[in-house]
Amino acid sequence: MKQPQPIANIVLGVTGGIAAYKSAMLVRRLRDAGYAVRVVMTAGAQAFITPLTFQALSGHPVHTTLLDPEAEAGMGHIELARWADLVLVAPASADVLARLAAGLADDLLTTLVLATAAPVYVAPAMNQQMWANRITQRNLKTLRDHGVQVIEPASGEQACGDVGAGRMPEPDDLVQVVQAALDPVQPAQHLAGLHVVITAGPTREALDPVRYISNHSSGKMGFALADACRDAGARVTLIAGPVSLATPLGVERINIGSARDLLAQSLAVVEAGCDIFIATAAVADYRPEVVADHKIKKSGEITEIRLVKNPDVVATIAQHAKRPFVVGFAAETQNVEAYARGKLANKQLDMIACNDVSRADIGFASDENAMHVFFSDRYGFEMVTLDKASKTEIARRLVDCIEQARRS
Ligand code: C5P
Image (cartoon, rainbow, N blue to C red):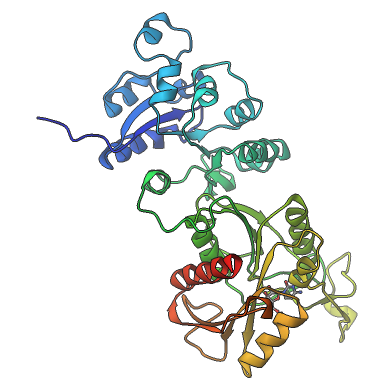
C-alpha cells in the first residue's frame, strides 16, 4: 500500500536519561502525526534503551556513531543534517546541553546540530538539582541566545525520588511543540523576533521565616498571556510568584518571592534587553518593615506590624533608560475608567488593561475575564472593550492591542 507523503522530516536526538523511555512513545506519536522520523542516539542513551526499539518504531536504522563508514555511506551526518526540517533533542541531558552550548562536535548528535540549518529544539530532562544548577542554566541561556528553542521541563515527582522541575514533557505535548513550529497555519506571528517579559502571580512579603503577607492572585492571566505571546512568535520570559500553574511550553520561567525579588529580576531582564514588558503580577503594596530572624512567638504579645511601601515594579521599568513597551493591569471595584487612566499616566505606561473585580464571574481566580484597555495619549487610540471570554481568548486580544499600538 502506498504511504502518504510525510509532512516534514524530524531528526530526534535521544540522550542518556531515564526519560528516554518516553521518547519511544514520542517516535510513535510523531509518526501518527504524519512526520518522518530518524533517530540519533548518544552513547548515554543506549544505556537506557536499545537502538532496536527506535528502529522498530521509526521504521529506519538508528544512527549512533559519527564516523562509521557504513552509516556514512548511507545517510551520513551532513545528509541527516540537511534532511531534517526540525531537530528535536528529547530528552536532552545536562551533559548534551553543556556540549551543545560549548559548540562541541564530539559525537554524531552534537555534530549534526552544528551542521543543520533546521530549527533545533531541546527538551531538557534531569534531576531537579541538576536543572537548577547555575552552570546548567548558563548553558541554557547560551543555547537560547544562539537560537536554540528550549522546551521547559515539567515539575513533579522524579525517577530519583526528588520533587521539582526537570521532567520531560509528555510525548503529546512535544508533538504539539513540533506542530506549532512547523505548521504553516499558525496564529499570526505579530511578535516574531521580539522578547516579551511578563510578571505574574502574587508576591510574598515575609514577616518571619515561616509567615508572610500575600494575596489571592492565581497567575492565570499572566500565564495565558505567556501562551499567547509565544504563539505570536515571541521569546517569552515569565517572572512568576508562587502559583500552582505549569510553565507554558517554550517559555522561560523565573520564580520570585517578594516584590523586591520581582523588581531585581525584572530590572535584570530589562537591562539585558527586551521589547515588551507586561505586568500582571499582583504585587504586595507593602511589606513588613522588619523581618524577624526567628519565628515570632505567641508569648511575645505582638499587636502591631509596621509596614513600609514596596517599590512599584512596572513604574520603575517604565522609567528605565532601556524602557520597553510597557503594559500594566489594574483591578478595580469602582470608577474603573478614571482609576485606569490615572494609573496609565502616573506609572507612564503605554497601555493598561483593566477589569472590574467586584464582579464575581471574572477576575482573580476565575478562568474568564472582561477588560477595558486604555492607551497612552501618544497613540491616539480609543478605549477598547474586550467582552467576557476565557483568559486564553482575552490574552490573544490583548496581544492584538499591543501589536496595534506598537505599529501605530
Ligand atoms: O497600583 P496598582 O497596584 O493598582 O497597579 C497595578 C499594576 O501595577 C499592575 O500592572 C501591577 O503588576 C503593577 N504593579 C507593580 N508593582 C507594584 C504594584 C503594582 O508592578 N508594586
